Image (cartoon, rainbow, N blue to C red; front, side, top):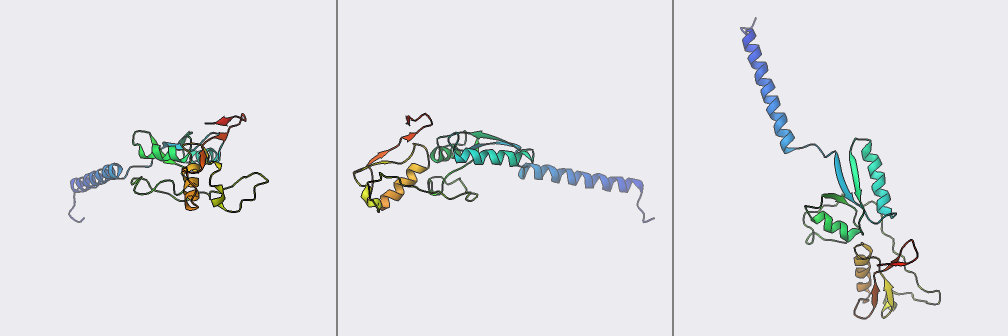
Length: 181
């Protein structure tokens, strides 16, 4: 035919298979497949981030990915776990503004999933219309470890309200009606 023998064709086939096998091994090493199981840090039990984590678990299960949910005290705990390479946490829910690039240089945001709504509850007889009027009062900011507290402290600080002249409380009501610490 063209001067090629069966041995030439077998040698060419062996060379092609060898090149493809080496290329596949290099790609698997340098560009590994996504994990089929990982751990996500959400928040407290029966709170919104746990529910969102459950929704992600259902969605990822359709693609045969197992998602384990770790309940935490909230965004600050999630940041701590994400920054700790030994925690096993690769994904976590965190409110925007809790951390910065300087504090967590290895973390990346994939985007927002919702907007944080802030509510201010006061006594019916209190006619406060300005955050500055909270100076000198007792203000509950949310539990330690959650994202509510540092974000609320930042918002209040803009209005001149801080722990120097205002009692900032960390307790919230638990399901039992008793304050949680």
